[in-house]
Amino acid sequence: MDIKDIDKVDNIIKRSRPIQAGEHIYRTGDGFTSIFAVRSGSIKTYLLDDDGVEQMTGFYLPGEILGFDGIGTEKHGCNVMAMETSTVCEIPFERIEELSLQIPVLQRHFFQLMSQQIEADHQMMLTLSKKNAEGRVATLLISLSRRFGRRNLSPNSLRLPMSRMDIGNFLGLTIETVSRTFSRLQKEGLIKVDGREIHINDHEQLRSICHAAK
Image 1 (cartoon, rainbow, N blue to C red):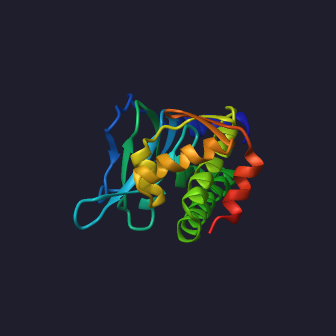
Image 2 (image 1 turned 120 degrees about the vertical axis):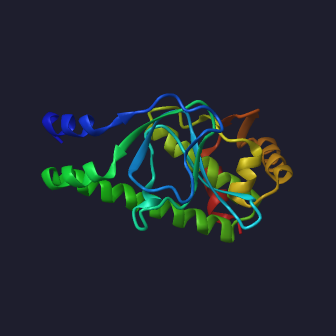
Image 3 (image 1 turned 180 degrees about the vertical axis):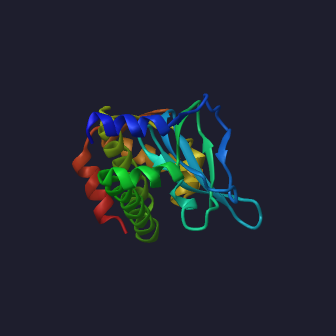
């Protein structure tokens, strides 16, 4: 987009106050009015089953967009919570629709973002249905590495924003299995683990685990 179009988009964005860890941006059933771009920190999305048990459905890093779940029904279908002190940009959906008529490239980019989200969901469903514990953890690490790289951060040194419990919940593993898997990957020399700090030593071997694990 040219500078005038960028200014038009910038004018509709609402910058939020800092959101504290554990604070919600929206909850299941809230009316849909906006999508959100993560500026700093990290966000998780989750559902609650009939017994009130949480099921993680996604993790979002700076530069990533969330809120698409409310477009179809005009109500959000999941809960969105900050995992650490975070800030987001709120982008009113009605204003996006208005600007898309004036700036066709904006609508195309918006559709690309939605397509990327659908593809990410499909890949995660495939991961959970076919891979063993090593394959699931390796897939998550490779995904985070790529996403860190897109933010111009090191794809090798990752600070995991989520807890081992959240990782286990997301991947369908117990917290003990997650910890053992990290230890096993470290023993094999593929990663180095220091709390939430993960250094990837061998991307190629980690990717081979993603493809081979059943």
